[in-house]
Amino acid sequence: MSHDTHQQATCPNCGFHTSHNYCAQCGQETHLHKDSFWGLVTHFTGHYFHYHSKFWQTLKALWLRPGSLSLAYKNKQRARYVPPISLYIFVSILYFVIYSYTEGSYDKADVAAYMKEERVKTTAKKPANTVEQPVLQKLEQVLNDDDKMYELFKKVEKALPKFFFFMMPILGLMLWLLFAAKQGMNYADHIIFAIHVHSFGFTLFLLNLFPLPAILVTIIEWGMFIYLILAIRNFYQANWIKAIIYSGIITASYVILFFTLMTCLLILFATM
Image (cartoon, rainbow, N blue to C red; front, side):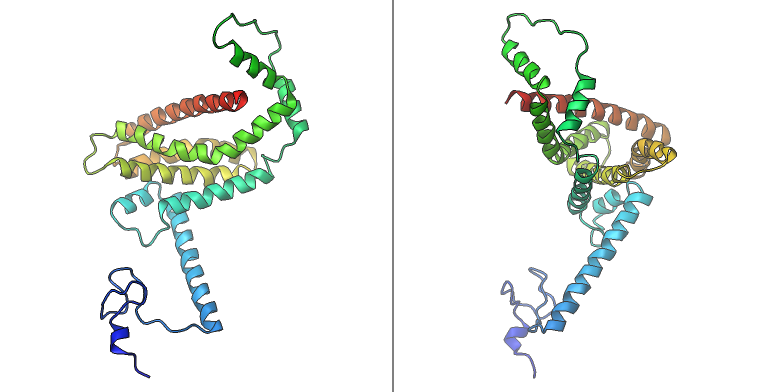
């Protein structure tokens, strides 16, 4: 049976008039048939393996060609790879799910043992009568209460995914300040680079959740810094000296800022 001319020229999704197989307005196929059961199965598996293939291609580029994904995105070569934010969401969720069943699966006894080792061994000096005194007293109460510390640990653990998401635009800002003179780049380009660096970091630290030989643990610990050097060199076309210096500046600034903000977050949760 031949198709109706009007149906052939009209997109069933948005109503845009076209004479092609795909709508130029929304991208949907213009000639769609009612699916049978096997049609649904074929359609689903086709999309799954297409995405699966694209995912592994993206992961391969992320690991073996540092900076290439960001460069491809900047050059508008985007259809072949998983979008940056989708990649980050997937690997970060995977990391925190596995983390919750390994490193993050502590109980109150673990927290109590940890706090017993970490508490100050000498009696802290009494604070003077200042406006901060109530805050310091509340902090001291939390630090000396294992149950409250357990609750604090759990709150921080839940906040970590959001915290890392918040750190990406900060890393993008660092990159923008360092490479402000780089022509043809705006802040969004640095953000994309930061997303890919964080995505690699989660895939790298995911390996660290499993029992590994000491040599591999050492490689993983240095892997992030080495990767950053290679990624900066490839994406920003920097020479080796500049790539190493800038990577050192970014790493030091990121670590200092991370732990400063983490401390502020701990104090905020403890005094709420």
